[in-house]
Image: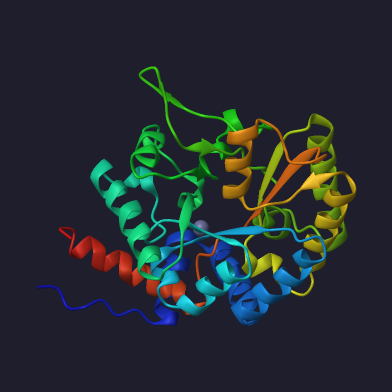
Length: 300
Ligand SMILES: [Zn+2]
């Protein structure tokens, strides 16, 4: 028997440095700074930014992380927003066996059910899917998926799409995911709030002209920060003035499925989502430990 895994913050940073180099250390430091704002504050500020136009937001959450703070997960639902699954433990699905992939998704859904939260949507960690995952999502009854559509061949779409398997249309609705995510704009491209707002308004205006749907991934850990939450408010305001509808993805998919159009005189649909991978910085360490234990206890 191996000894239970222990991992200190320093040990984690040392490992990061050894494995991924200086850039990962800089990234870890950035995340550490972002996590100094309590998650409850990040969420409350985001809800405030959405409120004026009654815009909705969906949060794909890692189930093991969700279990640490049921109060926050339930608060999201209570405020009228949507909770979705972001897997059980934020693993890369292509590295798992088909059976482990299914186990991971099914266990994540069981966690949310035990918290009394209704989950109908899914986004794989790192937007990383295998070709057979649409079949798996269909089998476990996922209504919408917000990550498969990040594949380069789907990213340019501006409408929901379905995947066929042996001549049958699978039940899950796939939503194209826009490439302008918060991590790309803030961490990779170093854009400031006004540049971010300009870029997002540009993207939304394009889709408004096409009458389609646009989905963004804005992680609350960045987009809920005081310096960026205004971008969200501006985006929602602009979408409203362009005649956009901003419901939860589940609402949008159900409405379109029944009516084949947007409600009232809405010209297009804006879907706001943001993954929650951690509540606090130490959850990164915790997830590494959980992954090690899962590998160790492979037969679960
Ligand atoms: Zn994630």
